[in-house]
Length: 429
Image 1 (spheres, rainbow, N blue to C red):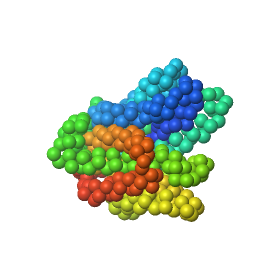
Image 2: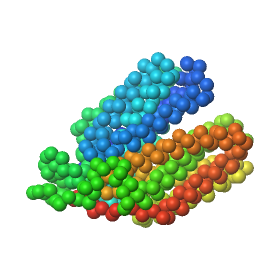
Image 3: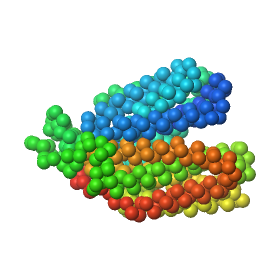
Image 4: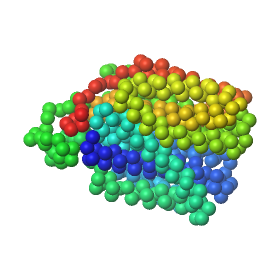
């Protein structure tokens, strides 16, 4: 791993810090927004979901474009869209306008997330790809944490609009950083061969301290399918991989968002005080910061599929014993921290698995489609959890239901095989 590669990954981490801030800012400003406009719970819920809806749409719409015109241009488009959405949100005159702008912001974030994950994967040496994706995941969690800290201080001093204004300015400030310092994917240049590809490839190879080329090598695997969009994902040789990845992303994202968004409320429903419920939720998120990092380190030694299967099974087991352990509060909170580690690691592992499952020509499309399907689960499952609670389900029954989702994910993963095993580009072994 050269400094050039680490720089590309570091910029991708920065981009995901901004993504985490932009997507989850509504969670920290929602209460103040609801008070200003007199919103009910259902209306606030729509605002909270709007960013995720836009994110799903952006991942599905922009990721295939990245396989045709490049990862870097789509990241720039996504940053401009997300930054504009955040700035305009700070001026929103009504809840309806804010909801529409949250969809717009999420649309841009979806494109950035899909492409930054792809670039981080493509610039990491094969052994360290899970770690690279894990670091990108930490950036997303870090941005969400930063959003919470800024919201606490800024809302009191300047109001909720200042939080959106800050996020918009920071997102747009990343545009020159990408223009000046983020390289285009080497695999994309070798696969799609745009104008001036040989000179661009040689500049990248110089940064990697690899031998330059006198001419482009024969087309790499996947060139014929490059830019084929979703049809390429459902081609006969690729379809089994794609459908399993979509099922995995839906199951894991559904379970993840129920656990992370409902835990404080469920702990109170189970008999804890409100402060204890918030403490439990905070500890779970704290553990999540280390989840993808640990998975990446483990996957550098053992096969990613093996490590991720272990994470999924551990998540299911820990969710099953979480609430029964509340009689020993210290033990329950310790379990909550470990749940945060493994449940976030499951998400990071899925990003890494998806980014390495497809060949160079359809990688961004594959990642974007999986993110989009996962976000559908992220929107549907928390809403279904609330309906089940209203229907009489106990908190423990909901956690057991989530445990089943992760166990099903492990079962699907055991049947998973990548669509291809592409050879790495020069300098990226």
